[in-house]
Image (cartoon, rainbow, N blue to C red):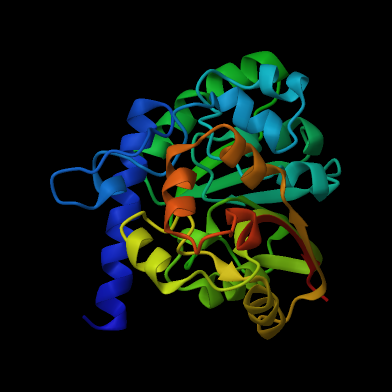
Length: 290
């Protein structure tokens, strides 16, 4: 297949897999479906042994934030806490790339206040519907009407040039088939002086080929992650500055210790004596637009 065809095929698998997650309410365990694609239908990109609340706690969300969320906004899809590193201020405009059920948007809303705006972008209609249904609950609890959700792909954001103060994202960019284009879009929509506060999965060193081959059907949960130095190179090429890439091993540790099916599958395919933490980490990504 051509690169374009490959990208379209991956995007379709992600769309199908995350539509199912939106309907189910949380990631399911390893279970290959009839076409052998795993996440394409049966689901295999996430934990069965951790609740959504346990995942959120493992990556740094406080109980107060978790309890403040509308029902179903947290689906256990996080690998970090980007709102914690964003230092959001009243009046700022924030966009969340791959906003899912709206978890980080609903947490960012009170931080930017009535004079600010939070925009979630997601390509999955079922996720958008889920997030939009929770706006009423968010507004009733917070007294704010400052969160919206837009249909779109993170490689082509439905936002004007220089319109955003802060770009958030949580464990989504690794799913993109064109990450350099994503970083170009991040730089395009940021105002001068605007900030990046992103959590994502990244590679400390290349995964062995047998692991990559085994994980190609897993909608990029781990196999789609970039090496840390490649992330830095793409961000620099997009014109971002002040880049800080901070490995956060807690997520991978939690998945391993709690016997997450996906992570057990990866561990079984690694060279003897290796651990998944030798290869994969959650990464806090901070930068600014000059």
